[in-house]
Amino acid sequence: MISKLKKLGLKATPQRLAILKLLDGNKLHPSAEDIYKRLKPDFPSLSLATVYNTLEALAKAGELQEVRITAGKRHFDPDPSPHAHFYCRICNSIYDWRINPADIGIASRVKDYLVENYVLNLYGVCPGCLKETEGGKTINDKTLFEKE
Amino acid sequence: MISKLKKLGLKATPQRLAILKLLDGNKLHPSAEDIYKRLKPDFPSLSLATVYNTLEALAKAGELQEVRITAGKRHFDPDPSPHAHFYCRICNSIYDWRINPADIGIASRVKDYLVENYVLNLYGVCPGCLKETEGGKTINDKTLFEKE
DNA sequence: TTTTAAATTATAATTATTCTAAACAAATAA
DNA sequence: TTATTTGTTTAGAATAATTATAATTTAAAA
Ligand SMILES: [Mn+2]
Ligand SMILES: [Mn+2]
Ligand SMILES: [Zn+2]
Ligand SMILES: [Zn+2]
Image (cartoon, rainbow over all chains, first blue to last red):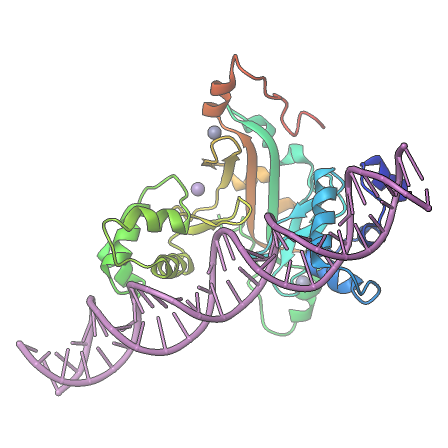
């Protein structure tokens, strides 16, 4: 992990190592503040600005991706590979949603546009929250696409 | 247009009519401030808060959709039907990108998730800006998907 | 070690958006 | 028509996430 930072030309500071360790394999898509609050007890001197600085450096290096799926807040994903995200409006969780880019059918639609990147966000209710409501209030069980 | 507002239970104020008129058929996906600056000369009393209020009321009524495709700013689209958007990093324009939802292949992937909505944003260079650079600096002409 | 360039920190600034409460005006009732 | 009600507009303050600043600290090179 130290060598990973050095490879990127970044100094291996304790703060950065702690952030990297927290993110490693993390599927929760935490916000900068999530990370800050989680590390602050073990790192009383940690500044929120450092969290942002580190996240930006890692993002620029292609080591993580930013996820903009909610209104005002960015989330961070240690998996930089292209994949979609699902946001549950009940528990506010973000789930990975693996879609083969070819299946989205964007490549064939490039027309005269140069497509360099894409973001696919899905919104709805996750399996866990759907179970919670079974037997209770009924949730509309039509998907957006069934409507059409 | 007056009746449209009344149908939604909204009073037909001059401000709202001006905003509706500006948006009608508008393909530019303006921000709240774009709208404000555009109308301010003809409406010296207009407040930015009114623009936001009106946009929120119209969005809630399903008469328009919000487009979150850039970092810190929302854009507004008088076309509430589900469609994707393309953001050109050169001219900062937002283009409509019509994709048949069925072609995205999300419906078949619903697994145990209830999918109520989706957002598909594309990023790159638009045809006009591609032409500008022809003969000049070369832009990487591979799409995201050709890489894979 | 000593040096130095980079990183961290606390705090201020920024930016888009939302809130507030007083003034105003459209719709309705008298 | 006039009065009343209720929703709307307005200016400006407040908020929230993020970014900038400048002094201090520290990792790593010399
Ligand atoms: Mn992810
Ligand atoms: Mn559009
Ligand atoms: Zn959930
Ligand atoms: Zn362009």
